[in-house]
Amino acid sequence: MAVEVETTLRGPQAYSVARAAIEMMETAKVWPTALNFELWIHLVADPDGPLAREIQRLLSSGETITDVIAEDLAATFLPKAKLNEQIRDAGDVLTKELTAVSEAIQSAKMHNAAYGATLAGATKDLSGEVKVDALKAMVGNLTSATRQVQRHNASLEKRLAESSEEVARLKEHLEQVRRDATTDGLTNLANRKAFDEELERACIEADANQGIVTLAVIDIDHFKSFNDTWGHQTGDQVLRYVASVIGRVGAPPRFAARYGGEEFAIIFAQESQRQVERTLNEIRQEVSSRMLKRRSTNEDLGAITISAGFAERRQGEAIHAVVDRADRAMYVSKRTGRNRVTNSDQMADAA
Image (cartoon, rainbow, N blue to C red):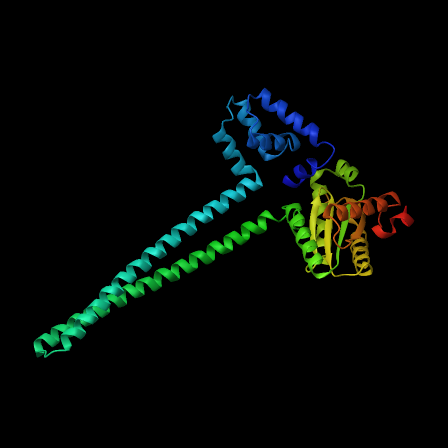
């Protein structure tokens, strides 16, 4: 999945993955364009994923990966490309709606102008002596013109109402696209992209208002061995369980996200270190309090534990620095026995 690929590209395997992608492109006689490189990076980092399977199918059938095919693959399988395509489609719909409304308004303006001219002419004719037959004709013309402009105005109102409904549907669709683009598909927590954006926003706001931002990093203990023993599907079950606890306890105004792999993060604003530590221990205790069962076979999986570390950001501190301190605090929790919470300000004592 996308988040695992992003995690791989930010770890020690990143360069070997990049080199393997270049070699595979050369073997397949594919030019190393930016788009092709992104596709092949996903192929190497997630060889069992749907994108990798489709590329392997194309290559096995002797298909040449042209620029057109690469763009189709990206639009189908890469989250950013899919998002861009949806936004582009929404923009096309909005443009059509605005064009149609503009044309309807222009038409109404023309008919209203004609109606105004008719009224002005009638006023001029009435300024002199008018015979009964001429007056009847004039009234008939005014009545006809009034009905005509009423029909056009009613048509305009209907078109505007339809357009408002379409724009409302479009807005709802774009909001769903935005949620999908910032949500981790497995856990339904915010994804890494949304986390990075929210942490930056929270830090800027804290600097402007002399506020407090605290970052917590949470990692599932022994998750790799658990995954190797029980398989990825059961591992995903565990990830969803831990995420459900984190998401409930870390609900707004806190911001909980899947940070990558089996790691999670929570952003706390305007909360004391004591409050943060109490919240993280609440999550830790609830996660470890249940004996899990394998959904497919009902086998006992035992209890899951987590290790957490947190760091309160210092005024003006760089974002990467507070992330590093929270991460190191989490690893202190790992090294000192797991299933515990470490405050970065107390790391020296904890170590």
